Amino acid sequence: MTETQELRIAVIGAGPAGVYSSDIFLRQLKKLGEELGLGTKARIDLFEKLPVPFGLVRYGVAPDHPSIKFIASALEKTLDNPDIHLYCDVEFGKDVTLDELLERYDAVLFATGAVEDKPLGLPGADLDGVHGAAKFVEWYDGYPTGAREWPLDAEEVAVIGGGNVAMDVARELMRNADDLKAKTDIPDNVYEGIKANKAKTLHLFIRRGVAQAKFSVQELREMEKLPGVQLIINEDDFDLDDDTIEEAGKDKLTRQMVEELFTIREMAEDMEDDGDTDFEGNPADRKYYIHFNSAPVEVLGKDGKVVGIRVEKTETSADGKMTRTGEFEEYPVQAVYHAIGYKPASAPGIAYDDRRAHLANANGDGRITTEASGEGAQVRERLYATGWAKRGPVGLIGSTKSDALLIVTNMLEDLSKAAEGGRVAVDRDPESIDRLLASRGVKPIDFAGWKKVDAYERAEGAKEGREHKKVIDPEQMRALAHA
Image (tube, rainbow, N blue to C red; front, side):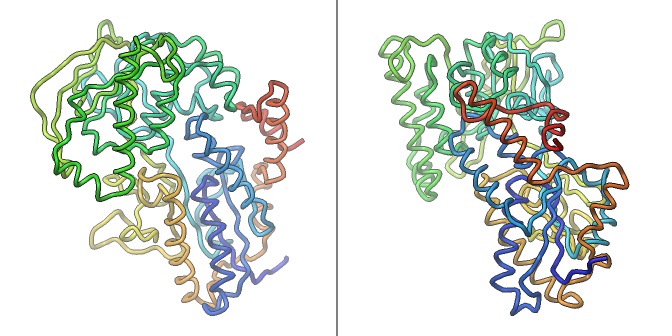
């Protein structure tokens, strides 16, 4: 057996949160390890249940985000590190247990993401034609276990939500298939699906006002440049009082978002004045309505299918408090997509905070606790959470870096107080985990295996003049990776 003196860390989840944390842990250890009595060497084993890495970047963000390829490239550079070992196609709780990890690792960090929608909770939510954003995103991003076909036969659709996922969903529903294919890595089934999309009218419903939306400026700029799409707004939504303008001005990102929304208002006016055109002045064959201060209250159905949506006008004060007006309007739609938040995944053997939708951790500091809250909540040694697993489904990918630094700082502090400079795992043989997985017939895909999948995707894309074309079949991924 090869005993090692390096710290041994297990990270569950190879999306941005897991990869950033691994990188920051190694950097901080090199910087602070000697003074903390930990040394400067660590081995990090990164476990991912999917056959490929990158989580949210590959499977949770719309394919036409230009910044995504840069983020994926940065994550890949991090994984190409001899101190980080990738174990894809290994599912925590099924292929390896918490006790087995604690036996072999000095600390375990959960960086699990989210694949479930928060329930809509409106009358009619169970009608045929109501879809959660997460499942639609899985379809257009080619998630390995996602749907391969999607019903896009509704001519009028509604999207509910005031954040970036709602914007992504709405944009893909209004997208031109050829334009999308030329600029992204979408697989053939998604191209064919979007090409057959019958949607001509889309209503985006945001419960609060212009100054309280949660869109990023980048999302708004992508909305502005949809070929063949006319943007339509309600002038009254932009009649903001002085208090609201002052409040919005206090936060830089909010101020920038509001300024961009006013740019969209001007664009919408120009599109109408020019005879219902798109952003380039070409005739528009699709209409995209943006409704602020509009709270859907019921999905209307007939014979079990969606036929409309009932919406109540709201008012939003400067402090973001929403009140209902009792004024209702109904819109004919045949499909409703709700993007009102995700529910981060639970983890076997770890307490879950249902109210805040994340793994139970102490005061948001990333240290896993025995229960969600209350006097009985005790910190469980050597267990940590980061990203959405720590804070719930809020914040952009960038928020994950600041999270990671906080959690890594806490981990190093705890490890420095532990026996023998943090080296508390009983089994320190780095090959022990490989033997355990092999004994169960589990064949992990490592970084070299991922590179084979990536090379194939690039080669397939090149045949069509594209940078990349996604493989979506998990069995094909496995065959490529193990070839």
